[in-house]
Structure formats: C-alpha cells, structure tokens
Image (cartoon, rainbow, N blue to C red):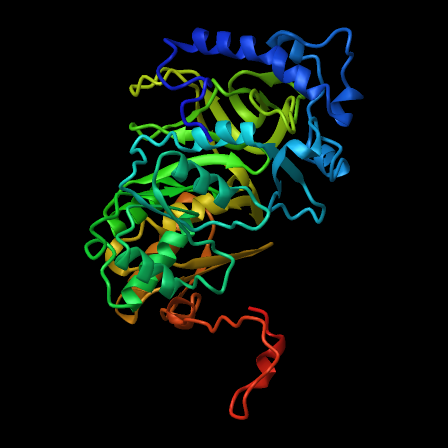
Length: 437
C-alpha cells in the first residue's frame, strides 16, 4: 500500500468551491466504474451516464435493502480476481450486507482513517480493539496504522483470547500510545484497570489518545472518558459499506471527507434532498472501484453544515445522531438514549457511576445504575430529579452495587483458550476435546 498516493490530501484546497471541483472531476470515473456492476447496469443508461453532481441527482437512492437483495456479488464492478477483501456489516436485519474492496480501494480507505489530527507515527503502539471478523472496522484501523508505520496490536473484541484483563495488561506492559474501540469499551477498560490495581489516569503514561467510533457518543460521556484516562477522545464516523466518512479536527468538530465522497441529506418525510441540514446521510464514495455506490442512503440521522471551522480544513461538518435519535414513548413523552446518557454522566465523577441501563414501558421508566453504597442514595435522588426536570418523566432510579451490571468476573477473568486436541492423558479433562475456543 503506497502512502504517497495521488488521492486528494488535506490542505490541497482553499475552500468549499475547490472541494466541489475535486468532486466534479472524479465523478465521471466513479459513475463509469458503477456501470460495470450488474445492479447499476440496470439503472444507468450507458449512452447517457451522469457526468455532474446535478446529473447524479436524477438517480434514485441506493438503499441497504438493495445491497442485501444483491448479495453476494450483484454490486461487484471488477473481476473477482482483483478483490483484496470481502466484508459484511454488523446490521441486525437478518440478511447479509456485503462489501468488497480492491487493493487500490484500500489505499483510499486507510488514508481516510489515518487523518487523525493527533497523528500516527513509527513510534506509536496502536491497540485495535474492534471486531476483525467480516466487519471492516478492525482491518481498517490496522491498515491505517501500518500505513503510517505504527506497531499494531490486533486486539479484536469478539475473541476469548483477548479478555479485559489481558487488554489492561497489554495497555500497561506494552506502553500502548493509541487505541481504537467503541466508547463503552473505554469505561470497561477503566473498571478492569481498577480491578487490577491500576489507576487509569496515571498508570498508563504512554497513552496519547483514544480513538472511538461505532456508537453514538454524547459530549458529556466523551468528557468523562477523557477525564478518566487523562487523554483526548477522538471521534470517527463511517461504516463497513463505505469506510471512514468523517473525522474529528483539533477544534473538536467532525468533518466529512468531502474530497473523497459526495454527501447529501435526505428528508424521508418529504423525499427532498439537500446539501446540508438535518436528515439521513446519503453518500457517493468517489474512489471506490470494486463496489461503487451512487447516492447510498446510510439511514443515519445527521445534521450537515458548511459553516467555516477554525481548523481551516474547509470541509463540511456533521453531527451524527444515528440510532440515538430513536426513542420510546413513556406516556406522552419520547425518551431517547442520548438524553439519559447525558444525565447519567452529568452525575459527579466522585460517585463513580460508569454503567447503567434503562427500560421504557408505556407508563413508567426504570433506570439502574451501578454505584457504591456511600453515594447510592445521592446518585439515585439526583438522577431521578434531573430526568424529571429535563425529560419530563418520573423515573424509578435504582442504585445497584458495583458488579451487578458488569460482573467482576468479566473484568478480571482469563478464560482458557483451548486448541483442537483429541488425545488426552489419564489425569486430563478430555471433555475439552470438542471445545474449539
């Protein structure tokens, strides 16, 4: 993978108009690639392919269901011999959502993820703690780290070989400097570190930053994680179908990589599409040859803005609500996860509340938090009061002893990883013969 590619690089444009010129220049090639796939061949007129952004707007949106309906190879635009990797998203629709990339596609993927303002270097030890199996996320971070010369620790987070106790040991003993995980992992790591006798904010001095993505993250939870670990929490936004779509600038705003993809905002209520505002994010990756996507609706709720940012990147900014925008009704009020998260993590740090859950029923809201006996009554009363004040719902808040929601064994155990074996000695447990984990 060549890090000195001819792809657009940050700083090569002076404003939004320059970015649009880059988009217009690449778009005909993108559409031409798309016309090679069975799916788009049926949608496009080869004698009159779209050549501009305004032309593209006449095409229907590509949906997630389109990808599922064309599993496995209906979206393929190159010979299979040219493919480097095949992936499927983590969606819960019950149908596979395929994605595939050539080695050339991977240069674009890795470069976009590597656009971290804090930077990768050869001296970094980079722990990747997101899934590797089928999903893109772990492989993407791994490739970006290697692109910039970092030493990658492939931690995964769906393997018994990497329990939380081992994560803490690796963080501490290897002097990990950068990490990639969903935000909830960082709270679990903090609890596991404390269980191992470590102080997250002081016993990991090599740590420089925590990279995160894959779940909605409120500012208050991000700030709490940053205070716990004493380093910046830097957000990333993307998908298995597209790779990285946005990254955080030094001023803390998420910027869409508009030099590498076209973005639109779709209002499902009216069917209208705009360049900015609130709605569902529609994306056309511009440098994707194996599986081109034209006007692909991610179905994530976002807010896109073209206002200037002090960082000087001259790229549109995005706020991602994702599934956090979805809520449940309690009486006449809708309760969303991000609302409760903001209130839980607004509790004083001294209460030590890291883990919580809530259940919504038609006529009541029950919230459970892990909190020590010393602070239990205060935390319960304060959270109930803030839910009533901010959301307008009377909540039953229950304080649980630490270990009730996240058992201590989850944080401290080192499960036995057994390799396949059929022959055992007289004093060995031969019931492990079929335990392939």
